[in-house]
Image (tube, rainbow, N blue to C red; front, top):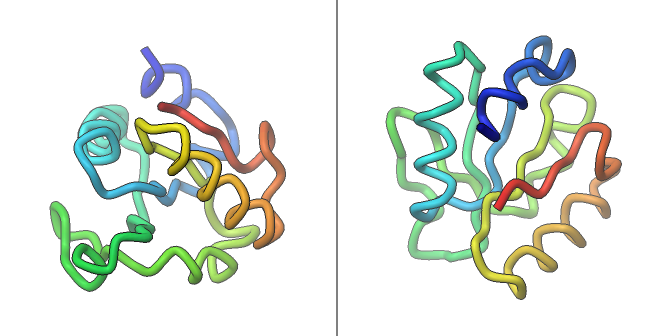
Length: 107
């Protein structure tokens, strides 16, 4: 249901998304968003073991690169655990994204 409703958001349709969290939750969300023809630019991740890898052809970038997408993509925090969600929230809002406008916690 989340992917269905996110795919109807005008900013999501226009700009595409960056998924913050390259774990199972983020991967599943990416798969579901693609079914709705949503463009996914990249994954952002704090886990250094995953940075530099590719998931379904998409780069896994360090989370400190969020500012590169300001005004260009909607950020989706897809971390299943609360400490990770709060870390992502701080990083993304610090990069200039506004929660509820161009940044959403979806897990």
